[in-house]
Length: 218
Ligand code: HEC
Ligand code: HEC
Ligand code: HEC
Ligand code: HEC
Image 1 (cartoon, rainbow, N blue to C red):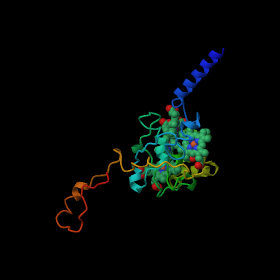
Image 2: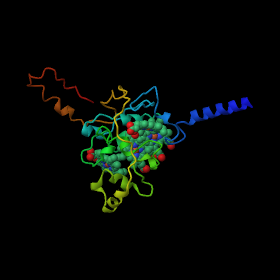
Image 3: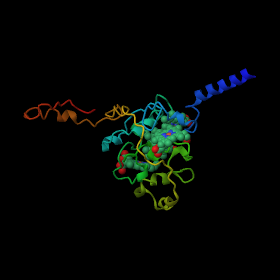
């Protein structure tokens, strides 16, 4: 009997370990994302963060935010868990210019994945969005930050919309290094005005000894 029980337990452990990431949303285990002693990213994150670029970043010159890198630690092509294509994604990892983003959705002044998603099991909203879109429709979600583009009908509904987000606090546990490759990935390309510019300064400019024309950031 004892042995049967032990086998059952062992089987259960194997099952849980095997399905921890494949089973479903984030509800299974806090430790799928966090770790108490072996942080690999900010917020005591246990998953290896991944830096991927979003084109919007080049417009506002903001660094990739660590929070986005945390989510991308799982939601990338290699792990295959609902991968996000950053080069075709709505602006993220940026400081808003014209959108009216509520302050509590900005992390260190930036729009990130968690401005739109609250990943915690306490959030019962569809797709972990910060507002419930099921029934209400996507319009109320967009209107949280884009009231100028939203219809009067949607704006009337906004007074009853509940935003489910964590208090946007800076991380206590910070792991540096993951942000170390913020410059470029193949998905973001600069337009390419370089060839036209390069020949011009060559003939008559004795003042710039250290300027290499090939010194492009990308
Ligand atoms: C899908 C990944 C994920 C899972 C699963 C997860 N967390 Fe988090 N957690 C995060 C991220 C990202 C942050 C930082 C942003 C935030 O607070 O929303 C965070 C932040 C926190 C914070 C700090 C909140 C703050 O405002 O500073 C606490 C506490 C926390 N998590 C506890 C938990 C607990 C407890 C569980 C399990 C019930 C859990 N987390 C499950 C991703 C996750
Ligand atoms: C430990 C790995 C892991 C991390 C880190 C993680 N997720 Fe997930 N996420 C999952 C898994 C597993 C699923 C379910 C995939 C499936 O159903 O195919 C999921 C599903 C989702 C979904 C879809 C939920 C649904 O109901 O369809 C959203 C949205 C999401 N994650 C957002 C985020 C955001 C935002 C972050 C960062 C705060 C994050 N995830 C971090 C593992 C992770
Ligand atoms: C949490 C805030 C937030 C939410 C919610 C949000 N956006 Fe945005 N959106 C922004 C920010 C910030 C920008 C970047 C422009 C700026 O800096 O003001 C932006 C930009 C855009 C742009 C311009 C993209 C470009 O390339 O110029 C479009 C289109 C857009 N959002 C559509 C939507 C739609 C549709 C939804 C709902 C599905 C939505 N947004 C939800 C904050 C948000
Ligand atoms: C402007 C708001 C916004 C931002 C920023 C944002 N998302 Fe989303 N995300 C959405 C919406 C809206 C959906 C649901 C789309 C739908 O249901 O068609 C979604 C869906 C998802 C899904 C589920 C995809 C699926 O196939 O079900 C994942 C995973 C996800 N987002 C991860 C992320 C990650 C990771 C980031 C940061 C890199 C991020 N999101 C940033 C609004 C956003």
